[in-house]
Length: 433
Ligand code: GDP
Ligand code: IMO
Ligand code: MG
Image (cartoon, rainbow, N blue to C red; front, side):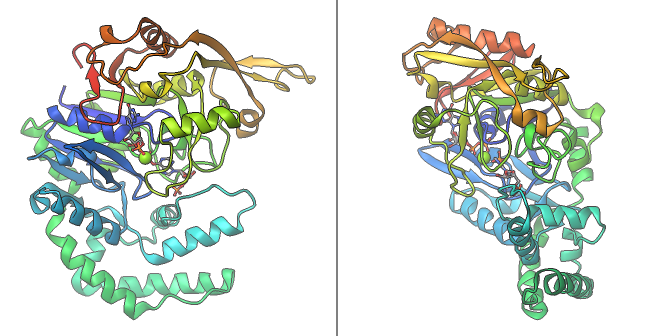
């Protein structure tokens, strides 16, 4: 298997960073294909914790190359900061980090608009405030500036001038806000351009040439399926395609070049930001799992909302992404639970017509329906034993094995990797994966 896509199969923060770090053992090139520094992917290795935001999470392994693909939106300041941290970690960043010339660039006005739009919205989304949405709006409106524009010495000034003039009209007329200072911005971004230029490549060509030479490529999804702008809980989503299809458009590789897709799920569910979360825990259990799982955002530090594993959600993700297998993380967080619940369907109290209830097994695309749905649970006994030292499936307590087998049956795909702690060593693969 030469090309693998790893995607989040819930609402993000499934532990994709950890899974990518483990799988990088058998990869040469790592690719981010969408999102921006709204992502926070944590790797705990060699006694240290490293949080990746824009750079692919496998780069702590020596000798790998990471590409930030055309589908990503890049805040140059965040990118340079992350490159600096990697360099301090002993990674040869000059060789290891490549940036697509077609990726769009985030400017401070995107961030300001993100915050202003959020404040004026009737129903908040709870964005990360990083300017991600407004940058993708400019991309779709054909008004954005790309890395190639940023690095286009003489042409950049004129392009930025036009963009700033338009944003200043918007800031003044719609929000009665002070303008962006063009001259200062130009100088700042010219400085970034000088430092980023040596990393810039034609991303699609770079990948296609590498694949022709037999290099093994790992595509790293950011966010998760339920945050995908098309297939998630719209409008409570991010502004990109976090699903597997995004790897093709966001990196410039054809669908026929993808060999396999791995979906990452937590052994329970979390979400950060607003929007429905059908299996959300009551307050006491929320506190307990949040503390055990250290469920605080890797990017914004916000407390994550937690709930039981939702098989309706995960099945939806398996279908949309065409997952060949799933990786289950954070099993250890459930170690002390006496009983564990799995949501296998939803009861829609008003969905059956004439006010009658009905049970739904497929993920509804109607957000109002999802918001009023009540989960239907199946209970399984917990294992009440630590799992953090297990090195194989057979070493897990029988109740944990039963829980995982039940997830496989509900999702219809095998589990290829299990993680029982945040450290690199606390994970094992199952079978030929
Ligand atoms: P990502 O965005 O999908 O990469 O996930 P995050 O890094 O935002 O959040 C996952 C968190 O769980 C991080 O703090 C990881 O270090 C941690 N983590 C990953 N796998 C495990 C695991 O199996 N057990 C525990 N306890 N923590 C884990
Ligand atoms: P990783 O890659 C969890 C959420 C935000 C908000 C919504 C839109 O670490 O899994 P945005 O700033 O993208 O416009 O915010 O999406 N969100 C994430 N939630 N993990 C992430 O990334 C997220 N990136 C964005 O909280 O609800
Ligand atoms: Mg995260």
